[in-house]
Image (cartoon, rainbow, N blue to C red; front, side, top):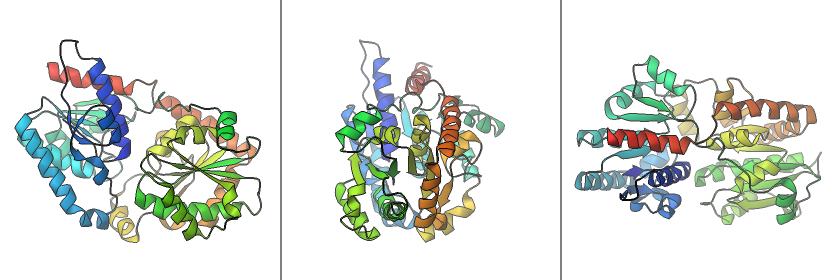
Length: 382
């Protein structure tokens, strides 16, 4: 049984499923079911719950969707009880999956947690949940195994980041520009507003306003809005309206879908929603500013629980404020425009690219999905 709740987890889980199947003896088959997104479904995992309905962020938003979560929880637990899977793999999505781990452990099932909850960042008390309810924790960041070991959790295996050596653009800058009618000789900035609807609504209008301000002193700049597979062009149109972008200004913007790596590789700089995308930009070595804005209520409720110096994963791995972070009230069109303009300065740009190369090297040499599959199969055989 495998359980995901958002697009990034779905992508990592699909790679894991393929590695598990590749390592299974020819005379045996693996039956896999659970909560799936489009990539897990494409990998042949049977859907009990659609993860598309669970990718919700924010305390009020989650509160309104509680019946959806509760129904999903009951269906997954009932199916686990009926089928008795040899192992349950929970992928990220801690608000849901840590509660599910408790219930499934009580049923006597073996629980693997892939992509450790970021307990080092906030809600550290959950370590006791990991210690009690998880048989094997697969960590993807280099400092996590030691962090857990200090706190008495020894069933942790570091497998490396599933992004390392797997984040690869398909097109070079010239080809990407040619395919989208862009000019490769002019500066280009990628805008990554996030993969969730609420992130598009909150981030993209601010990004577009910042871009329009930057176009005044630098009219030659081109902007590429990189959307994830599950977002629609209509959401971009709504953001244009909210930002007050007029028709003549729209010529500076190009929207691409499911081409994030190519857009980042082609870009001179990027504005990136805090999360996995900052690591992707770091691996590709694109100078960036990290942005995030939640609802005022969410920020007031959650900020006291956060216990790290940096929000951006790329900064956490670097161990320094490598990329400027514009979070909540700091995220304004004026500040974002100024930071993007600074990142286009050749000296600043090259210096950040050099530091991002070191961040990329710290994430490992690739093959995390395969190592995770090996660890799970060892657990099954034991």
